[in-house]
Each structure stands twice: as C-alpha cells, then as structure tokens.
Length: 140
Image 1 (tube, rainbow, N blue to C red):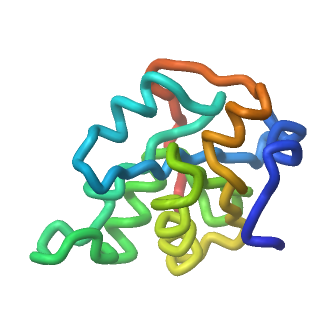
Image 2: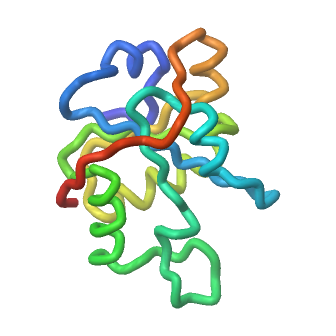
C-alpha cells in the first residue's frame, strides 16, 4: 500500500465500512488545531490530538506513549489496527506524517496520508463539514 492516497481515491471511498479518516492537524504557532477541526473537516473524520496522545510523563513534546495508552486513546477515536486509516492535516503535509508513523509503529497495517491534505481536498471542491465528530469506540 502506498503511503499516500489522492483526494480522488479518498473521495471515492467515503462511506466505506473499513475507512477511518483522521485529522492529525497540529500547529507550531500554538493555534488550536481542535478548533480548526471543528470549523472544517472531511466528512467522517476524527481529531487526533497529538499533544494528548503522547507520553505525558516525558519532559519532551510528542514522545510516543506506551502501547496501552496509545491503544486506549485511538480506540476511543474508533480506530482499529485493521481499518484503512487515512490521515491528513490542515497545512497540507506537516503533522499528518507524524500521526501516520505513530499508527504504523503501533501496529496499524493500512495507513495512508492524504496527498495535499485538507488544502488540496478543498481545492478539489470536495465535501467538508463542521462540528465535533461522533465515534464508536473500537479496540486498537
């Protein structure tokens, strides 16, 4: 499986039962990525909070959490290791690669990054929604 997926290919898969879309947005300037997510995101997406899903005991930012903590956090987002997971961010390609790496490292088998992220999705005129996401918990 290619590490990238095009907006066209993702749009064609929207609504597939095994598809999980993840907004992995994070901003270096401290802007609230969750607020950005709730304003605009791809239909069906959930928000991956890179600050929260990390080793909270480490003095360094964004260190990998334990497998148990990671599994609980992403399971609460409705993700399982066997899902087809597509990660994007609001910049195009910034923090999505980190989320992709974390998911792959922790055992997800089918993970891709949306080529061009949310900016390309919007340029291509594809659907966007707003508001918080609703998820059903899964076992990761």
